[in-house]
Image 1 (cartoon, rainbow, N blue to C red):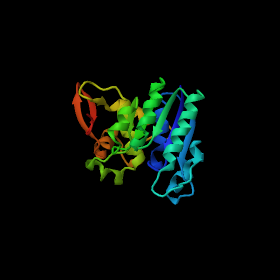
Image 2 (cartoon, one colour):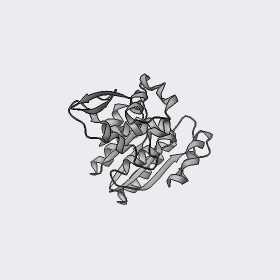
Image 3 (tube, rainbow, N blue to C red):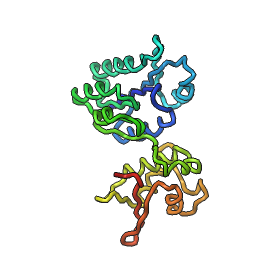
Image 4 (tube, rainbow, N blue to C red):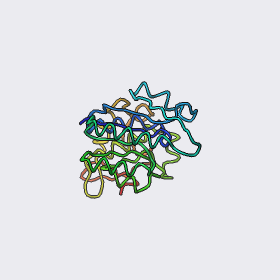
Length: 226
């Protein structure tokens, strides 16, 4: 599947780009990577530093009027061009902005899936308009102190690994399945890098999971899993 990734840089942090690309890699090849924003703005300096290393093309849009997000309209036009030129089999929209709800609906009406990526604050209007929506980061207060000990990319890697594993009806997944997944990708995670000899102790100290033992096997479940 050829995927077109469109990024609303005014509305999402650059810290999530690796997580998004790794997730989309499960569905196909991200052949189009466009990042929209006013690149004269110092606010986007973090994005500017990582574009080339992730093969993302910056799409310049000047802010003609203060308080108006011209990038949203430019990104919508870009998506329609890609759609009508049949350059993609699926779209991915990286934004926490509900303004892209009509765009997601329009693309789906054309028979193409839309993968949405945004933070937990993303309005339901946008999350519901996507074929699948993936939450980036967490506002769970239980994880505030965790992130000071374990970097955000590690926390995201663990959460995404849990999302990819096979789980029983009560959302329990085996510890071994998580351990295999976090070792994959461009930035593998090893418990030894954080001073742990056992994966069990590492997982428990992150504070992200509940644990239980069934039939001699250790299972884990994300604390905020629904």
